[in-house]
Image (cartoon, rainbow, N blue to C red):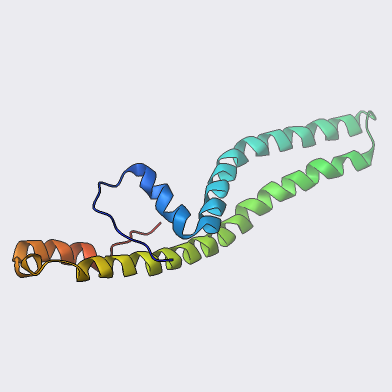
Length: 140
């Protein structure tokens, strides 16, 4: 699959559309991760409240000791996600950047190769092309 750079004004929607077309799996993982990461503080409050409620019920002999394990597992999972999720997401982000760079840089080189000679001869135009062409893909 080759990417083509079109002569159009790119919008904010294209920031999501382009990565989704090049690396749909990694982009979807990043989007889901951002949503989960935004929900983690609220989930931590709910999980901690559940743990405390269960501990108080056990202390008052209103619940079994085994009831504490589920809230404790959820606390462990939220903390583990915060530590392990970052490392896994950095791997996904690196793979996504590599694929985007591979596809996007090829498209930029093809676009530069199709330039009219008059643009190459014009110093001002060529300076702009070189500035953009050095690193056409900002880090995602």
